[in-house]
Length: 399
Image (cartoon, rainbow, N blue to C red; front, side):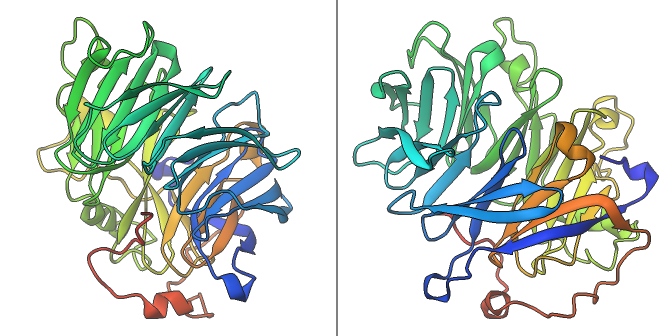
């Protein structure tokens, strides 16, 4: 992805698809993800279904609907690069399910009895899922439950993530803690505990980045961003890592200020919410992805290395002017961005999904040479946007 120094680039929406074409079953998108081989896109919807699309530079094409769960879908993932046909989902109905996209049939099912599930992760033969304070484990070979950790968190477990290279399990919660366990020697809650990182507020989303996934970003429920050296904190002879490397407590204001110094200033007078982060492995750059209530999205490079080296004065804005802007397709909050990688990234940038019930494919191949005006979207706001109250809580709750 282009560095900020090269100037802001404006992506072109090369394809879009509505998920609510059935007016009797209106819905919007929680999350859209591409398959590991980039041949498919799966979208989890607010009506508890998953829509499947074929994906190519020529566009998105609807393939099938999967009636996946009986209540809200919490997450969807393609966990295995070697199995691009294996799609997993979890839900408040207490199930983690695996779907074979070739037959569109259920292939695996795991159940946490009488408990809602909010997050999951899959690694080799293990499935882990977080619920109402507990983390449950199943054996993929038998689909039988192996263990439950019931003393890790005091509130809903919002994130679960295996770090396969180190046999570590990372969990995060609305209680503001990120816990790290070593599961190499078995599923022992006490003996496997390594570290607890105090984020201080509800963790909504996290991701690993760096050459070995040794760093972690956390998006919080108060729209802030923190960066951590989690693997250093989890080391046996840990030195450091127990405090955040950077705490962007005013991330939205920082993003708006950074955009104000670019050609995208008119689009981002205010930045309303954070979507997540994207790690560009080719450049070694972490970018914050944030958006506006009218559907514009920008990728802001984070000046992390300069911050670590002490090259920035205290109080400096760690966000640089946007490297890439998405605008002109969505007209409501964008909930999800998934960037392409490998050969597909030569043609496609990302897939986005939002509360306007639209999926969009973006490319830089036909990006506009000049910045679009903030009023070029002549279609006006969507019905949902008109009805939406301008409150401090902009996102629709996934729960």
